[in-house]
Length: 352
Image (tube, rainbow, N blue to C red):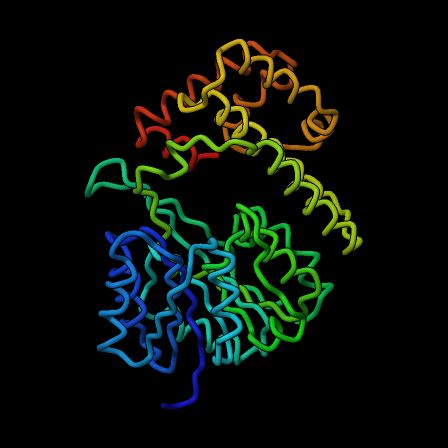
């Protein structure tokens, strides 16, 4: 086998309806010098066997079966096995455009980049064969040193390009020399990428989009209630603030991005509480929201944030008025739209 340019890493768990398309999107890549490390994370369905069938016909595909331990443990196991010059992380229910690996690898080699960041699509299905696409993209850029990247990182955070692993190509040497791994938390993507960008020196950004993130599963974020979401978002905000303090980057654009991001996610946490799958009573929900709104951080972030869409400008009004009741009812309306009319909710979300 020729030199391995990219190691693709994919954890698998309960995705038997989707995993075949994910694998075939890698087999269709114009770059052929890759290895595909698929980690069956103790899935109870047929996903593991489906992956084995692909591996039997393609010696670049390697399937590792393990007891269930979560996506972070699956990815970390594969990282330790990877032989490629670069690493790429794929989710098992999504798919990639055929030139993705070749294009991103060529950019990495051209600029000696430790990290390549691309745009992506979010395809939200509101019926079986009908979906709306949200585009996440910024302009092409090459950041040859820490200072240039840190000064402009707010642009990438602002477009959600630095949170997930699947729109990036990572230099294996950088990961291994710095002993970077996915932490064993519920939302592991963001802290992993924080550890990546903390000291990264050479970053290339492409305006091209390759990755299709699919929102189609019944347990997707459009319907699920997530206990502890507010506490987790507060923790994430702390990571972001600490990162910028470490960088000593405190310019107006960066601080406004952090504030707006906090406010948007705060509203998401309120929506989460009004989710019908949350078992709290109406009075308990209002009490919880009232307690959240007492956080002095919220008032501080509301002063700095500059909502851009009419949707978000409307959403922040009850918070600025410090009205628990209006905040509660507004979130109920959004939750109703989210659960009953995915198409309309997606259009609203795209606008924000």
